[in-house]
Image 1 (tube, helix red, strand yellow):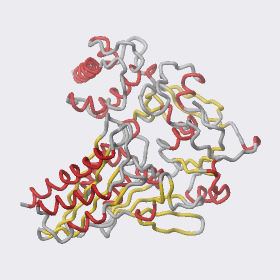
Image 2: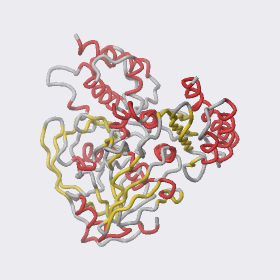
Image 3: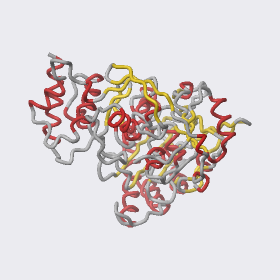
Image 4: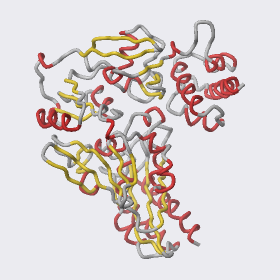
Length: 288
Length: 169
């Protein structure tokens, strides 16, 4: 399959890339890892007139902890960099658990976290993790820079708050206010398939109490879902079995699954409940 | 997505000159940006050892190494390989000797129809570069992006472990 014809721009600096975007408007699309965009243009679900390839901007290839303890992930940081990251293994349990479960090893060698979030596929894994961790996306244009909270970034399936003249240059994960723990649980029919159901669990505990709780759900709605009510049940508590059961019930209620070839809506809702229970239980055991 | 479906003026379409290193040899081609790396290798450079299976980023038959990392060449534009090193199955063996991974596939009957084999071997080669002594589990994990419709996974895993032992000896 060949994509429809497009004009290819490979800018050598961010300023140049922003200029190209400002010039072409919504005719242009940014190409980073390309593991969603290239399949889309091959299948002709998308036919952008201009592709702006940012792979020539090595300054965007990083992930690092900043002085304030927040984590910054640049637009060219590949899934594999996060999978093998010692920084993540030590400081970001939810992200470290999710990275090896993204697609398959070949896709992980090229695809990026920021690109996955910008693609806004409701079955993408990273958006759930970012929702659970209260992350933000930094968008830059020729006229300025803004930080968009994840809860406002995804507007619908494959739709984001990014303007056509903006590039998402970074994902930012705020510093922890306690000891972090967390998991990413994913049910897939085979490696590389989209999640039937995914659940990102992120907790911060201090003095035996939960000070922050994040639960993000994948594949069970028109968008990735932040299960806010379930999170609220956990905050201030000590992760008792009844709190966990209530959080799991509320997360399942927040899910809006549809019956498809991967399973029935009722089944997926049940998996959410099981995953949230399972994701919180090791934390309970550790705290005891 | 309506904005994407816009006619573009023919004069805005330009062929690009791309120079890449394929199996150690520098090649320069002029191609349209929409040409995929898999197409450049097969149709442009005649290296038909890179197979195209699903053509939808699922199967891994088109796996090649770009700067030593296995990727799906049906999901990368050829222009993006400009200035990079590409290794295909044709680059594995030397003039006189098979690569140990290739030898392993022969010794352990690691192929049936052979369609997935080039991609399997390149993923395996990249794994052994990084991890010369993998466990069976690590081999399975590293090959999990390469599908075999003959389901000959047992012998493929054995072949890679055979090659690992050979490379270490």
